[in-house]
Each structure stands twice: as structure tokens, then as C-alpha cells.
Amino acid sequence: MKDKKEAALVPARDLRDPFGLLRQMTTELDRVFDDPFWPSFRWPKFEKLMRPEAALFAPKVDVFEKDNRLFTRIDLPGVKKEDISVEVTDGQLVLSGERKRETEEKKDNFYRAEREYGSFYRSVPLPEGVKLEDVKATFADGVLEVSVPLPARAEAKVRKVEIQEPTKGTKAAA
Image (tube, rainbow, N blue to C red; front, side, top):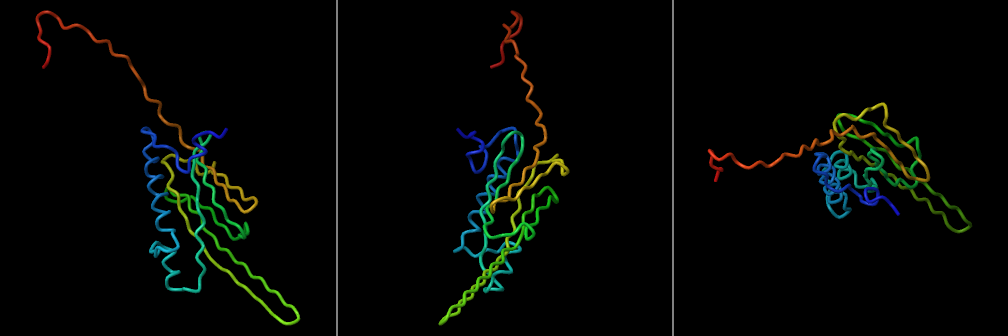
């Protein structure tokens, strides 16, 4: 059985994690703007409106928390490892790259050539205190997975407070 945090696209809102809600909002906004029927005005996708010949390529991103790490998975079928860039900058995990596919078929009485190009750019906000040297990325079978260690959370200290009876000379507050 999968861990509940892994099964969710975005982890449930944790009151101690101020970035949980931000990650959820970012994911929802990305989904709205990545709909192929919705005009995208986010940079660098804005340039695609100027170049209609560019193929729309907007891979979906899964972000989840597991074993005190933040995982980001992105399906990139047909993309080569050399055409992918993973960077951590200004508190953001930036994933970008380009897909190039060309096929050519020649037979006795026909010739067919197809070309497909597209670039993508996605960013995921990271919590403060992430150690940049511990970020790891793997790419296998068309799936890019980046894991980032989450900073230690301060444990909430709980102290039991005893309820006392008021002394006889003082009145209880109303």
C-alpha cells in the first residue's frame, strides 16, 4: 500500500508547513495555465504565441513528500538527458528542456517526413533552508525525478497547564 503522502499529487496542508499551501496553489495555477485551450502568457511560453510553428509541449509535474524529502517527477517521453536542465535558484527548482523528434520514411511511391519540436519550463517553489548540495536528480525511462531534502521542522513544544481553583479573595474574570 502506498504511503498517503506519496499517493497525493500535492501533500495535504500541514499547519506547520507554510510552504504546503503555496505548493498546492502553484500546482493548481500551473494546471489552469497549461491547458492547451487556454492562452499561456507565462514566460517563456509567451514566445510560443509569437511562433505558432512551435509545438505545444507542457509535461505534467507531480510534487510529493516522502521520507523527509520533496520529490518532483516529470514525464518527458522522447526527450534525451542531454536536452534537460535542472537548476536550483532563488528558492525555486527550475526544470527546463527541449524535445526534438524527426522521422523520415521513404518507400517506392511515397515519402513522409515529420518533425516535432517543443520546449518546456517549469518551476517548483522550495522551502527555506534547503541544502543545495543535497539535491539529486535521476532520469530513466523518460521520467525525470528530482529529490530535495526538506529542512528540519521545529517540533511544537506542548506543555500541560494545570487549571487551578481561584483563591477565595479574588473573583473569576467574566
